[in-house]
Structure formats: C-alpha cells, structure tokens
Image 1 (cartoon, rainbow, N blue to C red):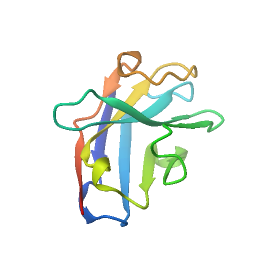
Image 2: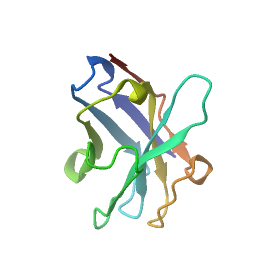
Image 3: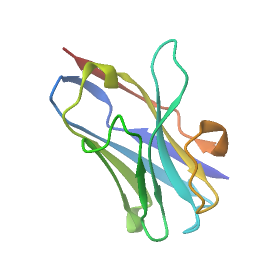
Image 4: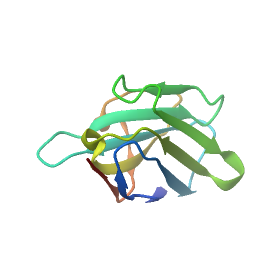
Length: 124
C-alpha cells in the first residue's frame, strides 16, 4: 500500500505561480510512475504530468507544456509540480497518483494509488 499526501494548493492571480508537493510513504519503489491529474467541477479527471522514479522521464499534457514542470526528490520521497504562468482554466482540484510500473499512461484508471487532492484556484 502507498499513501500520498498533496500540499501547496491555494488561490493565485492569473500569471502567478504555485508549487504542489506530493509526499509518498508506504511500499514505494523506484519502479513506480508518479502522476499529477486535475479535475474541474463538472469535468472528467484529466492528466497533467508524470515522472518515472527510476530515470526521471517526464511527460506533460499539451495544455501545460512549457508552463508546468514535474520533478522528484528521491531522498524525500516527494514529487513536485511547479506551475508557472497560471491561467483561470487551470483552476481545479489537483491529485497526485502512483502506478507500480515504469510504463507511463495518461489515463486515471491506470493509477492504483491516489492522494486526497489539493485545490488550485486561479483568479482572472
């Protein structure tokens, strides 16, 4: 079992920045893929970014490429999502997720473990 705890959400003006953190504990492994997803009211949960623990390969949704950066601190078992140039359409609950394989997928059902989510609100 893996436990994930997100933090770092909040209210920010358009053009601003936030950094989300996801602390992982439990039966973590270097053979995991960590992902960030988001869900706005009335919409499906959508892929944002992913990173492999081993190798650190990164993947991004087209909507956030060039603005968001996913990274990891192996010593702290923590994954980060640096979000710059935020837009009102980035407003959503952001979830951290883990998948016990290095094969990256961008759909929510492909992830086995989820955090509780953190709210990000971008005002115009």
